[in-house]
Length: 133
Ligand code: THU
Image 1 (cartoon, rainbow, N blue to C red):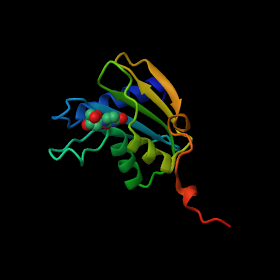
Image 2 (cartoon, helix red, strand yellow):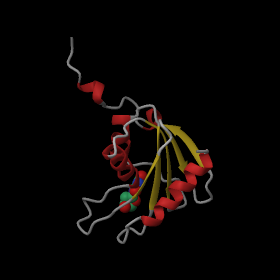
Image 3 (cartoon, rainbow, N blue to C red):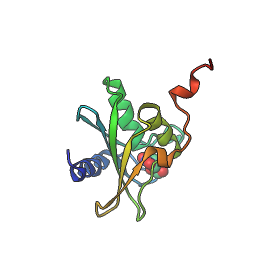
């Protein structure tokens, strides 16, 4: 998939967002190493806390289908500024893909390209749990 196709897929995914409280819709398109793309949207809840972001929805869909090798994620969100992934999403992505590339898209589908290591330097991941010696 080209960069613009991945961004368009994220943009389309936001149509399914369930965001009656914030009215801030977000879509994500997570690309696995084998080329398969998993989409996600934000899903809010009247109890606010259980709300899940678009990025984590995409990760949950991919992992539950046996995919844990990710190379890129495109994110499209409302608002005039680029919708940067929240801390919880950065952490969840880091678990599977510390070297992930992020394409964070704006309203006009222009985008900034970032790495997860830039957004979450010195992250805590599976290796952090390995015992010393
Ligand atoms: N949201 C996402 O889906 N992804 C982000 O990276 C930031 C925030 C959602 C959560 C909530 O439904 C709405 O945007 C407002 O915070």
